[in-house]
Amino acid sequence: MTTATLFNYSYNPQTGKNPAPAPAHVRRIVIVGGGSAGWMTALTFAGGAPAQSLIERGVEITVLESPTVGVIGVGEGSTPWLRGFFDSLGIEEAEWMPACHATYKCGITFDGWSTRPGFERYFHPFASMLDNLTMTQFVHNVEARVNGANVYAHPDRFFIAARLAAEHRAPKAPDSFPFDVWHGYHFDSVLLGQFLQRKALARGVRYKSCHVTHATLDDSGAIASVGTREGETIGADLFVDCTGFTGLLIDKALHTPFVSFANNLFNDAAVALPSPIGTSIPSETVSTALKQGWAWKIPLTSRYGNGYVYSTQFCSADAAETELRQQLGLLESDTPARHLKMKIGRVTKHWNKNCLAVGLSQGFIEPLEATALLFIQQTAAVFLEFLEQGDLGEAAHDRFNQQVNDHFEGTRDYIVTHYKTNTRTDTEYWRANAANLNLSDDLKRLYSAWMSGKSIVPGVRQQVIGKGYPVFSWYAIMAGMGVFPDPDHLRPATTQEARYNMAEIDNLLSRSRVNYPVHRHALARIAPRRTDESLQIYLW
Ligand SMILES: Cc1cc2nc3c(=O)[nH]c(=O)nc-3n(C[C@H](O)[C@H](O)[C@H](O)COP(=O)(O)OP(=O)(O)OC[C@H]3O[C@@H](n4cnc5c(N)ncnc54)[C@H](O)[C@@H]3O)c2cc1C
Image (cartoon, rainbow, N blue to C red; front, side):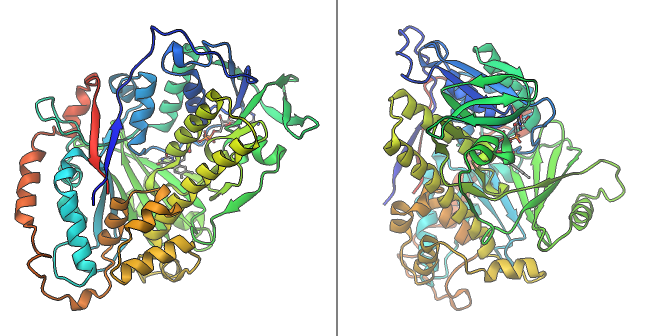
């Protein structure tokens, strides 16, 4: 029961075609905020080729950025979807990755979240074409173990990405080995913002350094203009709020209600600190559970980015910084740490009147699975589709907001599962997370199906819970954390249950992995992408 999913990343600039007419009613777009969200949105609208560009079709796009409020300056890991973002703009890895000190990411290791023997650490892989050969075996074995059979079901031995990450290899095979791995990236977030800005300006986006102080509403309650501290009044047909957690337009001007996720995602603060990178560069993020939260370790070509995400209910900023420094061996170091607050949840309407909120202004689910840039990318891209179709009425607003909200809720539930399934007992923080009963109905149903040996596939495929992550990711997290109904009383597997030979899978992956180069070497010679590349994966 596998599902073939085709990801086609090929870049197909329609340079020869006449531009389509500009969307009616929207001639001027003002984006307030010049962080990753502001520039990604500007580039999405500016497009990858003249025929796709709103600017080429007469729409004026201006980014306003405060000279006094900085960008958040964190956010250094991505999902594989970022690859599609650059491809759609015709920007090569060979151009942007060195400029942003970027590295490849095969997935994330979760270390120390579970204390179940044999499951203290697992890898959440990005899928690959090779997984088409091992995904069925993984799902089969997990289902057998959920039903009490003593078969091997830890995810790490089933996925090529786990092998590549363990050996610091890059997910980039040569043309002679045509099995692509769906990979993400790590990058310096400040350099990424600067790169995107340069690209956007080159594609005709206008820029103004000014501090927006307020918005003026028209009779219908829509935004007519924004006023700046420099004394200007700037009007537009569409305003995009990319002002980060401030939410200057979507919140302060339009008072769009906010749904907090604080009752099941406790973390609301972080402390970040760089450390030197050694000679070998890993191709994974490591998320290590600490006493009051978790620490990220993200390899760039120039340094590691590290940070500790914690809850201020359970831990002070000083204690968090000390624990992070201890973990990194930097207790005596004078490298300054940055402390950040996080607002966890989402607005009810990401598109409210003539205002679109993108980035931290629309909401944030903590960074455990590095999903924030994906929300930015999808919010901007889906909105552009509505705009292109001239679909701007109330019903369109509702459909759009429902879609974005479902994505938020589905992703939230996946992140909650990391905490809910933890078995640490060392601090009140972890005990409270495990005991937390504030779960969505979807999530309760999923846990109940899993623990009674029933299939979770229909639930994930049909309900909001599947809008964030595919079935295979749910299998990876539950099996990776060692969540099985009665692990102490496993029975011998039947012949049918034990039909897959782990030695064969080991052999296949061991033979395959040598086709992928050492990560550091791959980064030293990033080649232009093969054209018309498509990636066919059974994601389950
Ligand atoms: C601890 C932490 C870790 C994270 N890790 C990840 C990760 O691994 N992966 C990931 O995808 N995301 C991550 N994120 C999220 C990511 O950092 C953000 O989604 C991303 O940087 C986009 O931010 P932004 O552009 O919305 O906001 P910001 O970067 O805060 O930018 C806001 C912009 O608005 C401007 N502005 C503000 N007020 C005004 C005003 N009055 N007038 C004019 N301009 C104004 C500012 O000048 C700035 O340019 C993380 C976030 C945090 C807090």
